[in-house]
Amino acid sequence: MTRFIYSFIYTCCDNLCDFGIETIFGETMESGKLVKISYDGYVEGKLFDTTNEELAKEEGILNPNMVYGFVTVSVGEKMLIPGLDKAITEMNVGEEKELELSPEEAFGKRDASKVKIVPMNDFKKHNVRPIPGMPVNIDNKIGKIVSANGGRILVDFNHELAGKTLNYKLKLEEVVEAPTDVALEVVKLFVPRVSEENLKITLESENVIIDLPENTAFMQNLQMIKMGIANELIKRLDAKKVSFIDNFVKKTQ
Image (cartoon, rainbow, N blue to C red):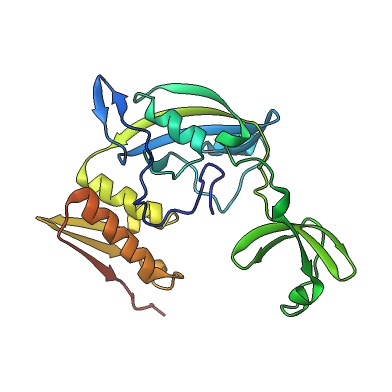
């Protein structure tokens, strides 16, 4: 499940932002540092996203597929919407900010060219009956059906928050620095729902060994995910080798 703060799904971020450096307790933190944040996001006064599970319950937006708690991000690597990414570069650990983000600082302005007519036959090929409001994925683009009249289906491919001014309560909770913690958080960036209890990471000299739980074995694009994790750990920990252990446990009858 992708959070609303993310500007894209994280793969291997090598395209660094040009936000410079961040001040933290009088020292500088280079772009690319891993930090943990918490936040509450509002649109038109209504909570739409949060890291706080209790608040999500209170406001009636609890998502059972969402992992709540602090979110780990890489500073200045365009993992977040621009306004949040920039704000973090200017914050100290423990600092809280209230932000009002324009559409340009959030999910962009609405683009009329992203509202397209899709032939009914494209839906029939996949045995899908188009209904207004239905989310769709067409050519790897996420959209929502606006109307379905005859053979012409109108689909809006704008982000649902495009054109909106957003308000955030943002806190920089901590900087992730210990090598074992860095390794753990990198794995969680690529596999957000991985259980920490079932994940074992061993650092041996210049080698990193990642013992994956059985439930990751059949993940889609697992080899690409492993490659992304390995590239990040080689870069962040100056590791020479990253190894993965896939576990398959005999089932008891």
